Length: 212
Image (cartoon, rainbow, N blue to C red; front, side, top):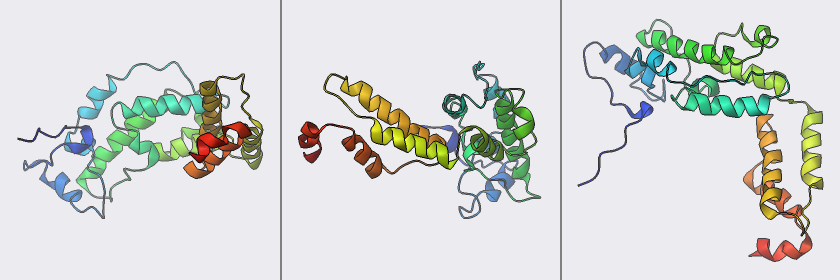
């Protein structure tokens, strides 16, 4: 006998009651909307979950975007709402009953973001009406997407080298941090290219490790 599948926010059963039937119908075609989000299946659950989130002390500024983004992503993933920042749950069509629930969840994410942004940053992103736009604009403003920032990070990747006196784990962590910085500014490298930089950072006597 197979064990029952694990239930998550995104795997809730499709509602069958007459009240929820219009919502289920609005999301029944994958081409129109690829995800059936919990805010549609369980209206009102968002407010209860919001109260379970821990209070964050970090505030977004132009100096701490990378740390802020990682904290916020983990924070919102606790209640399966980070998908509103990535745009994976787009706004449903107008004049549909599901639009009201999407707006509630979207506004909840906007509220979480606004409460973790410094006063000087709020005028630059607070006017945006979708959590996805706020997330993208914060990245554009703070993450340093200029060619100079990209060039400097690549320069560090090229010139970061391992010596036999150094701890291997610390060296790998240093390289991963540089690669993560590229992801945060929207210029992430492929796994193959990242492996090339790691190999180049090691001395010749480590070639046998990579050739194996």
